Amino acid sequence: MSAARETIDLRPRIEAAVVSLREAATTGAAFSTSFGAEDMVVLDLIRGHKLPIGVFTLDTGRLPEATYELMQRVEERYGHCVAVYFPDAEAVRRLVAANGINGFYDAVEKRKACCAVRKLEPLARALAGHGGWVTGLRAQQSVTRSGVAARETDAERGIEKFNPLHDWSDAEVWAYLRQHQVPYNALHDRGYPSIGCAPCTRAVAPGEDVRAGRWWWEAPENKECGLHVVGGRLVRGAAGAAEAEK
Image (cartoon, rainbow, N blue to C red; front, side, top):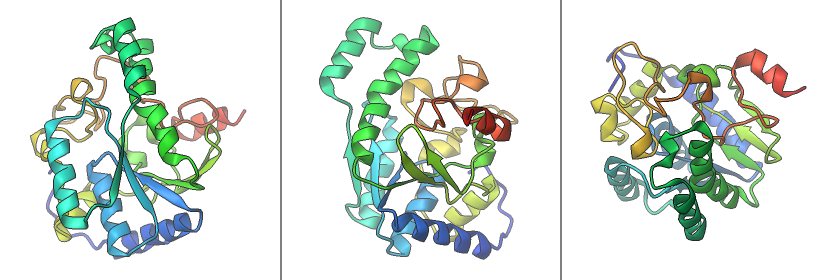
């Protein structure tokens, strides 16, 4: 775990997050989890409060073994509650034929093409028919996410987006996991604060941004896969949100 073990009163945070989740439930929302630390908090809140929110994950086919191990632990603790969506096999075949198995290292465009096939298209299928989308996004995670709010409209998909942990700190996330004995990805204890596909994730050094290990060969402002956009652009704080609305 990356945060100090200080005692934190999380009751106000939990109450606010549950209010957000109950609001999301009224829209027929679904929760997308990648089994990161934040997502495990959200999942525990959904299951613990018996909220009618569907849960799904995107198995890109390139996930770390530790993520699959956590998926098994989640099923053992919470029951079979997470639907798994996979990329279209033919689309993956075409992608690899065009760019190579690890072509995403060559250019941002190729990396985004990989994300489009392995993440964006499955996400569209997973969200089809849902009026809301719950995420584990937090403003503190990175420069590209500093403008995250509790509730937003995803104009790209025409859906309401709920971020119940938007203002939680790293310490609060880890305090919740400890206090409620929630399972988490073993890679977090090996210097991986943010975990995605295995080829595109590395451990970070002390003091580095929490998402420095994601697509580390790219500039910080490019480090999103396209799942979280507003008006076709990534939101990078209040100024970015205002620009996206133009």
